[in-house]
Length: 479
Image: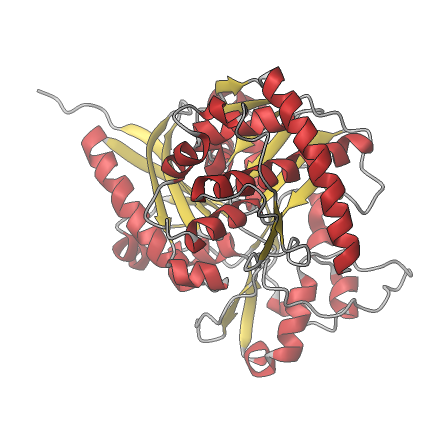
């Protein structure tokens, strides 16, 4: 009896702020296996999970996926990795890895001098490199490369040292000769640009032994997590919106026009003529994790916590319960970072853990609603959003968020958009599809749509107006 033919699959991995996620996605776009490995909680709380933690998590995730591959007769035929940013990993001339420069650590140098043409520096990365050069001088001098998280892990697998550019329009967002000169940085420390989706190497023998993979597997250039998430939910057409939510959150509109306001972040899209316009919420997931920690529920899943907060049915969150009680206000001076160590709570009517949790959840929903309103204030209509990330897997939270925002929320079958985006990118690179649009059509399938309950939305709207009024008074008092 002949052996069944192996199913070809892509090993997709994403380096997050609190965990590493990985999956095997077959050539038909189906999720065959999934693994999530959290970094040590004490390091995550301190914002100190580093490259060594990424590597340990990747090793464990691959072991889990390999077990599934053996049972299902799957063959890994390519690897594609994405990662958080703007983050730098300094690698020494001897190949040693120094402590990283993370997107959330606040370590940035003052603005650079004006460029030769009088314009300002636009790089999201070089302020961190300049801080490194000034504050950690010995390490900077002995540093050979400054590379992003996904580029570092790809290099550990056997890839060449490269800088993966989402599109040519991103070059000034990363760096160019004029900006390197303005920041007084050494150009040779920054690896050459390659395009997203290029093959950047193969898994070498040492990496094969280290991670339990076969040598020779192609390594495909994956991009920053938010770019891959856009691909992974199909936000590659004008008007398609991605709500990417994990430790942090961003509502990203694919638009044919940029935003001319500092209230929103405008970056080039992958596709020429399109823009990624985003409203950023850096602490939504972090706030709920903060609540879980201070209430001694680290052993509980988010689903269990939301059941306690919302009652037996998530819809009970709307009626009678949320219409009374106090509000939760995050530390207004920490809302733009990971620091959620303190908060202001109106304690009126908040007498139980479930009521406190309800107030925290409500404040997160109101943050999302405020971000939507900010986008719409500048002419970007938000009728519905496609969800990506860990929060998208929580059914109760999706229902609550739909009720609080009054928007339809769509969840793809592969809820981690970064992993789906990696799969799409690899399929194009392997020649299995002709272009990115064809890959998205194959991989991105909507599994469920959450529609708002209008009565619940009306109640939340009344609460939202009261919350905004009180928040404005607090901000004025504390500023």
